[in-house]
Amino acid sequence: MSQTHSEFRAEHLRFIRGISDLKLFDYINKSKKTTMKQRFNLLASCPLAESSLTLYEAVGRPVGRRLDSSRSCWPPRFGRRGSSTLFTLHLIALCSLLITGCLTVETKEYHFKLKNGTAGEATITFINILSESDDTTNITREDFQQLIDLYLSGGKLEMDNPGYHNVKKRLYEKNGVLCGEISFSFDSLSAVRLFKYDENSPYMYYASNPLSSETLVETNGEQTEQWMPVVFWEKNAREFYVKTRTSSEGRFRTSLLKQFREWQAKKK
Image 1 (cartoon, rainbow, N blue to C red):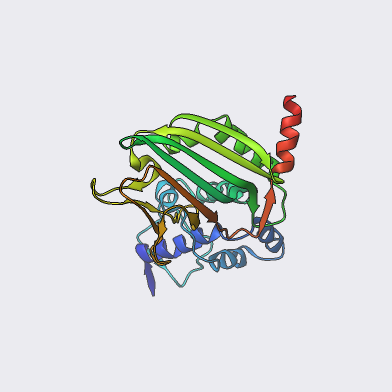
Image 2 (cartoon, helix red, strand yellow):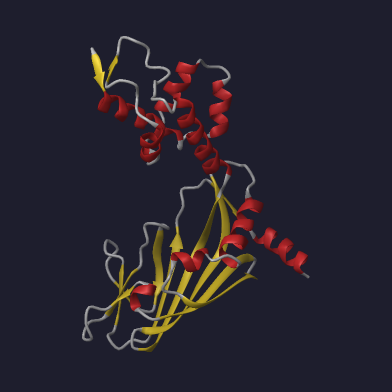
């Protein structure tokens, strides 16, 4: 019985996508006690995760259009550019995912004030900025440096939000946690995710952000049902307030206040 290229490709992608869900150190420890084929089966059993379809296509496809299933499926055979390149690329990506942590925050407060038509000023406050990881490896120092280099001193925030103008940013300590604040002006409602169908309609704000797992906590507007996380304000409203809480799947969350205090001390 033979296997078509598309079937092999689907099987191989399931293997590749599973890599990002496996802890690197567990894999290394287990790898010392297993054969190459057993390692392949171990990785292939991981949950699916969106990953490297493009890398697979870029590196090359298996030699031949059909594969003989009577022969061993390990190791997979690739074109002239070789499977070692593919494995190296995925190992680099895997290490980046697992060694680098993630910045998150406990709650956010949004304040918008309209000045002239759809233009106005805004302030977003990040309360309790945290380093998040899936294991006990301490990456708080690296995450804090990322916070400084990319967000406070760098332009990532402006790049991600081109509708923000005259941006001002600061970090500070309040109530025993690290907080951040950005203030800016905007020219359109869409820049701050406000919506108004026409001049006779209420203002609307979608208070749930699936990209950052935000859920609504409180607002000065009118909340709708839980299954429709939209906030409404009267059509002549000029000031808008929303507070959200960020949920996370990370098992370990560590405050960056210590790193902030050390950073401040060095600046003096």
